[in-house]
Each structure stands twice: as structure tokens, then as C-alpha cells.
Amino acid sequence: MNAPLPGFAERVFAVFLGLQAQARKAGTSSQLAFAMVNDGQGVFGYRHAALLITGKVRALTGISVVEPNAPFVAFVERAAAQRLAAGQLGEPGVVEPSSLDEGSREDWQALSAAQAFWLPLKDRQGEVFGGLWIARDTPWSEAEQALLVQLGDTYGHAWLALQPRKPWRLRWPKKKLLALAGALALVLLVPVRQSVLAPAEVVPQGGRVVAAPLDGVIAEFLVKPNQSVAAGDLLVRFDATTLKAQADVAERALGVAEAELKASSQRAFADAESSARIDLLAARVEQKRAERDYARQLLARSEVRAERAGIAVFADAERLTGKPVQTGERLMQIADPAQAELRIELPVGDAIALQPGAEVALFLDSDPLNRHDARLERAAYEAQATAAGQLAYRLDAAFADAPPRIGLRGTAKLFGDRAPLAYYLLRRPLAALRQGLGF
Image 1 (spheres, one colour):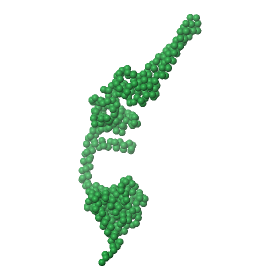
Image 2: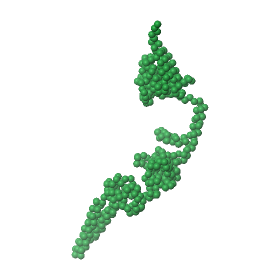
Image 3: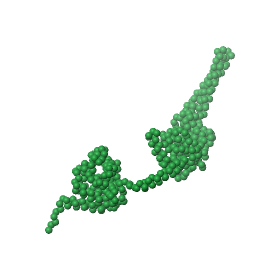
Image 4: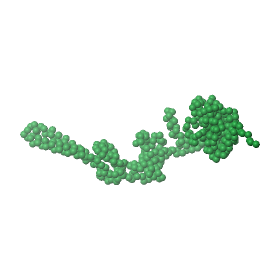
């Protein structure tokens, strides 16, 4: 005797039982999430489904990786949040457009299907920890809604078997929340020492600045960076071609003036006119002599020599060699390597109250594991623009022990007075809020 052929209802029910079995066989939460949004599509004919766990979309139909900032993901999360606010999160059923705000309704029309069903996922205590947003173009029948509710219980049970319970939102007792708030307030009142980080550089202390003595072009640097020099050593040589020509012309002009004066002096005994010109010619001789002396002084300045012993502190000779410079432009600095201080550029936004003698710790970029102690000596009252274009206060600190090599850079940590932890954490946000609100 042959068995009767199953009807449509029997086939649907068999597929439904297969969905439940597939959910129970899932070995990981990722496999279960994929099955929840994809396997039921053949039975219920939905266009797409989205799985939400604790308010965040975890899986989408036909998509392997969920993009958190996608428009559809943001719409589903916002719609679920509105159902939570309206107290409808735990109720399965067809989603009415009137239950959402105007913006969500517009996104619904553009991003999702016309008929949406919300299927909550609950734990054993009846608390919602997730849900399924299932949307299609045709209305949901009562039989389909009943099957979805049963399938939701199966999905919730399978999910809790794979992962610990995660409620949709924390629901702690008021006493516990008050105790936590009190403990947090006490922690925020704990006094801590204020500190700030700022870029710093080891610079010479009491060094002699070598500036350009005249307007001209540098021919060559005769010393290298950090080279030891003695007093009188030649440091820089300027291009003296023009200066030599000026000195030679001034010398010849002086000779001509002296010859004219001598000739007039010899004719003065017989010529009254020559006698009257002697004073004028004598003044012209003095003028030419002054011009010659000035030309010789300029020629002598074309060679810059060290006025004291020390090391030559500058960045790069190639940067200035062959380029014109103006009088007074800084070329280098002659410093004693044993006398150095710490120069700190404290950004205006990070400035804290610092007293003279405040503790400073330097960590060099070349040796970040060792700390060099220093004490704050001077702090500028006005902020100036740094080489990077940032406004910063200049601070000078003296090293407690032997200073590092001049020119090294690093990060300085400056320690201020003690203040409550709340002030330490909220100082920058409060300053930004005050600037934004203008009070």
C-alpha cells in the first residue's frame, strides 16, 4: 500500500522543522546568525532580514560582513531603539509605520520592504536580548506570524546556548547604581598630581651667538656642526670679491686725493688760487681715507672668527653656503658643551599652572628609557609661534646632573600642583566647552 502524498501544509511544516534543526546544529554564533537571516527566506519569502543583538546589527541577509555605518544598518538600529522607547520591543508582530518617527518612515520607504515583522529574542526570564527585523513586499498571514513566533523561541534558545546572556540594556537595582555613583564620586575626588607633556630640546646655556657681520654671500663654512673650536679660529668666510674691489678702488682714490693735495701745496707759494684750495683738498683726502678704512674693515669682516672657545652649534652648513645673508642673521652659536639647559615649548592648550622650581623629567628620543631630571627656572608670559606654526610658551629648565649632548630632542614631562582626579580628567573638555559656548 502506497503512502499518501504530502500536501502543501505538510511540506511547509517539514521545512519549518528543518529550520529549527538547523539552528540547533549551529556550532558557533556566526553560523547561527547566518542561518537566522538566510535559511527562512524560502519558507517566508522575505526580501531581507536583519539580526540585532543588544541593539546592534550582527547579520544581514546575503551579506557576509556587516558595515556598521551603512544606511540600512543605521535605519534598523534606530527603528529598534524607537520600539524600545515605546515599550514594544518584547512584542512580536507586524511593525506599523505610525510607531516610527517621520525620518525613520522615509528611510523605511527607501531602504526596506513595505511589510516588516519584528521577532524578539528572549532569555529564560523573558528579557529581550535581540531580535529579527524581517521585511517583504506582501502582508504577513496569521499562520506565518505564529510560525515566526515559534521560530523565534528556537532561535533565542540556540543563541543563549552558544553565548552568555546579553540583555538589551543594563537593569541594575537603584541601590547598586547609587553605590556605584558614590564610589565613582569618591574616586574622582582623589588628589593626583597634574602633569603635561611637551616637546623639548637641549640648548646651550650662555652661548655666544655668531651673526653675519655684513650683507653678502657665504663662500664656505670652515667648521662642522658640534666641532670644537678655539678663540680666534676661522669659522665662516664670505665671498670677498666685491669687497676687495671696493678696498682697491678706495685705496686708489685716496692716492689721487693725496697727489692733488701735494700738488696744490707746492703751487700755493706762487698761486693764490691753489692756496685757497688746500683746505678743500685736505678734507677730501680725509674723506677718501675714511672710505678706504671702511672698505678695509668690511674686507676684514668677510672672515668670521670665534671670540671664545667651545663647540660650534648649528644645523647644516649646506643650507647657507652660497646663499646671500643679511647683517645680523644668525649663523651659529659657540657654546660650552658642559653648560646646557632644557628648552621646552608648551602648547597653549596644554598649559597648566607651573611654579619656579617645578619638577621636569626629560625623555630623549634617542634614549627613551632613561630619565633626565631638571628644574623649571623660567616661563614666558606670552605665547609665540613655533617652527611648526603652533602657539606655545617657552620654558627653560636647568638639569640636576650632567646635561645630555647639546642638540638632542625629546619629550619633557612637567609636574604641577595636585588637583582632584575629576579636574585632571575634565580640564581639557571643560576648556573646550567654555571656548565653544563663549563663557
